[in-house]
Image 1 (cartoon, rainbow, N blue to C red):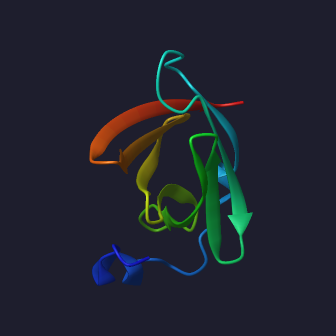
Image 2 (image 1 turned 135 degrees about the horizontal axis):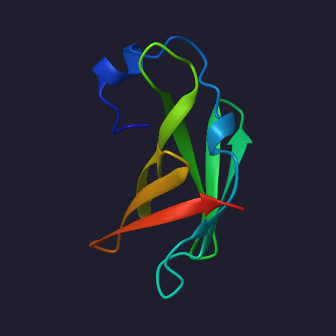
Length: 108
C-alpha cells in the first residue's frame, strides 16, 4: 500500500494472522452507512467488500510483539478505509467522495 510509513512496515514480525478480521460484520447504526462488511483473505493480504463499493484490497497490521492482526488499511481509487479492533468491535473510518464517516461493526 502506498500510504504505509516505512517505519510501520518494518515493525511487522513476519506474516500477519488476519483471522480476527475475517468474516461478516454488521453495522450498529441501522440508519446510515454501510450496513454490512465482509472481509476475506486474499493472497498476501485481505479484501473488504460492502454493497456500497466493490471489493477493496487491504493490508493487515499486528499489535506490538505479536503477529495477530488488530487493524487494516484498504483503498482503491474511490475509497480509503482505516480500521481497527476495539474489544470485539471493528471501528472503520471511511474516506470517500470528500466525506468522512466512522462506523462500528460487530461480528455476525
